[in-house]
Length: 235
Length: 314
Image (cartoon, rainbow over all chains, first blue to last red):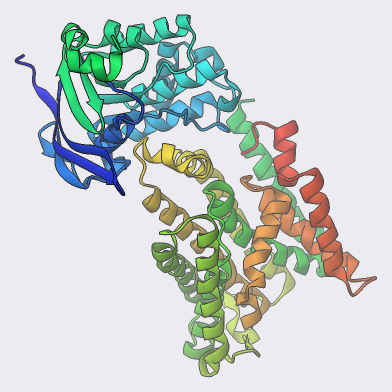
C-alpha cells in the first residue's frame, strides 16, 4: 500500500501492576482507512486506544501522529491535533441539551457555532431533538450523540470504542452508513465486537491478544489466519 | 420576544428595582440592601466557581479577606485613596485565588474542599497574628475621611447604596455575559463531566483555574467594597464562616443561576434580621430554612423555578 501513514506506534507499553495490558505494540494507521481493532475481552484494546488518545500515559514506546511525536502530549492537546475519541461507556453531558453537547465540540475547533452544530445534528438525524435534554434520549440516540460529538470536532482520526454496543440492527445500519461517509477525510479506528460490522466496514483489522498484536491484515486474511481462529474467532 | 431579549429584560428589571430602592427605601433598609448587594457580589463570584464550574471551595473567605485587607491596609497604613485601594483589593482577591488554585486544583472533590479550607484557615491565622499590620482580632476601623470616592462620602447612606449597586450591577452583567458565552458553556461542561470535556479538547486544569481566578476577582472586589463602604476591616470577615456563607446563599438562591446569589443573600439576611427581633437563636431559624430547602427545593429557589417553569433562565 502506498497510503500515507497517519499514525505510527512503536513498542507501545502499558502495564498495570503485573498485568501487561499493552506490551510492546507496533501499529500503523494509513490515512483515510477504516481500521478495526478486535480481540478477546481483556486483550488490551481499550487501554491501547487510550494510549493513542492520551487518556492513559505511555510507559514505554512512541506515538507519531501526522509526522509529529505526540507520545507525551496531554489528551486535550491531541484533540487539538485532530484525534477524537468516543467512549465505550456513553459519556455525554446528560443534563445539557443535545445542542449544547455538540456545540461544545464545534466551538473547540472554531467556526460558525450555530450553523455547524445544526449541520452536525442533521447529519446524524438528531436535528429535531436539539433542545431535548441529552440524558432523556433513548440509549441508541445517546450513542449516536456521542458519535456526533466526535464528528463535530472534524477530526483527522476518529477512535470509536465499541460504538454499536447496545444498538438495534436498524441503528447499526445507520451507523455503518455514517462511518462510510466520513472516510477518507477522517481516518477511523474502531474497536468492535460485532463481527458483521467489522467484516463489513473495515479495510484492515488488527487483532490484539494479551496486550500483543496477534495479526494485522485484510478481513479475508484475518479470517483465514489460524492463530486468530484459535485465539478469538473460535472457528 | 427572543430568549436572549427575555433574559436581558429580566436581569435589567432586577437592576432597575434595586435602583428604585435607592430612592424609595427607608434609611435602615437602604443600609441593609447595600450590604446585601456587596455580599451578593461575593456570592456571584462564588457561584461562578461552585454553581457553574462545580468547584466546591471552602476557602473563599481568603479571597474575600484579601480584598478586604488589601484595600483596607492600603488606606489605613499608606494613605492610598479609596479608588486605587479598591482596585488593589480586586487584584489581591484574584491573586490569592490564582495561588491557591495552582496548588489546590491538583486535587478534586473532598480533597479540594479540605485544601482550600486549610489555605483559608492559614490566611485567617496570618491576619489574626500579624497585629502590627492588621490589628488582629480587633480589626481596623477605617476613618470616615478616608472613605471618599470621587468626592462622594461612602459612609453616607445614598452614595454607599449606589456604589454597592454599581458593583453588583457590573458583577451581574459580567456574569450573565460570561455564563452565556462559549467559555461559560465549557465551565458547565467541566461541572457535568470533566473527562468528557477533556476528550473534547479542553484543558480542565487551565479552565478551572481561570474560573477560580474570576471567582477570586469577584470576592476581592466585594471584600474591598465591604471595607470601604462599611468602614470595618476585621479578622472575623476572613474566618471560615465567610467561606460557608456564600455557599449557603448560593444554595438557597439556586446554584448555577445568575440571580440566585442575590435571592439567597437577601433572603438569608432578612431571615436573620427579622428573627433576631424576637429570638436570640436566629441561626436556628436559618437552620430550619435550610432543612426545608434541602427537603423541598434541593436546587434552591431559582433552580427549582427553572426546573418547573422557567427553562430559559440562565
